[in-house]
Amino acid sequence: MLNKLTLCFLLALLLGSVMSCNFVAQDADSSQAPVQEQVVQKNPVNLPCFSCHSYEDFSNAEVFPHDTHREMGLHCNQCHIIKSHESMSLNGGTCKNCHDLTTMKLSLTSMPASFNHENHASMFGCGDCHMDVFKMKRNSVRMTMDKINKGKFCGKCHDGKMAFPSTNCNPCHSAG
Image 1 (cartoon, helix red, strand yellow):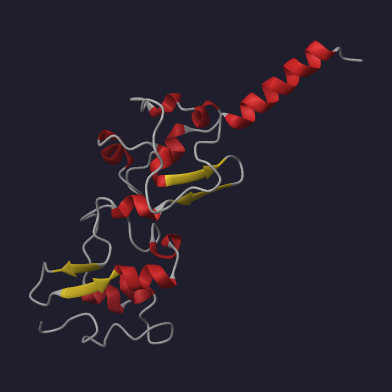
Image 2 (cartoon, rainbow, N blue to C red):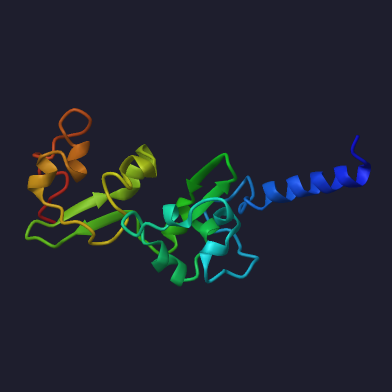
């Protein structure tokens, strides 16, 4: 039978390894980024998660510009709510600190359009549109009405069945 000292050591080791993965308290407030108590590491590869998980799996700039946000001093747990080995979700409140996510004006063409992000976000989760339909990188794709009418981008939902058809111009393109 193990002696008490060995048992305590093993218990402490197990507890330490489980706790090293948690970055955020269970009841994270999404209205404000969590206060960072530790110094942000310049090299995220040294974070506890990446001692077991591949850093390359989480650093794909095609999906999201993580390096840009890290250079601004953001830490993983300010954007992600991580419950080790259980779940990971986005802390949408952090995005709103720098980005206007209410109504977006798309004005690169002679037919400017408005997109009510706030309205869509109230009906759908972030993962419903991002990263599959829309990458979260500014100017990463060229959206055209031809692509939309063929079921890409907004046309994935605006097909006349799930939402009004993309051929109905007025809801997005207005004279004002």
